[in-house]
Length: 62
Image (cartoon, rainbow, N blue to C red; front, side, top):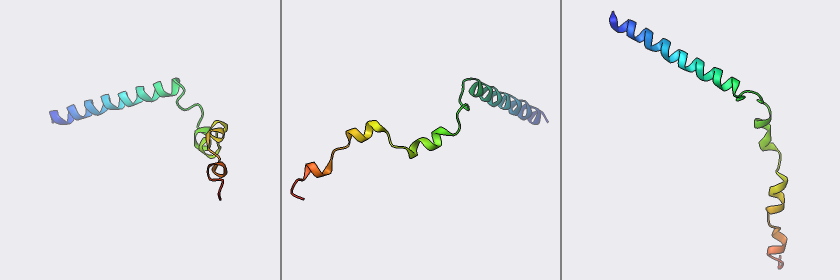
């Protein structure tokens, strides 16, 4: 019977830790912008376009 009491206390402590971590994440802004990170990969960076070599200039014989 004492093991069940220990497990209940342990599970409540773990649940409180997860609740505190969730509240900290919400307050620190982790869930502010949920849309743009999933769409950001679809757009090209202008910086990377300039850095890519032009393949036509590398092999002028083609």
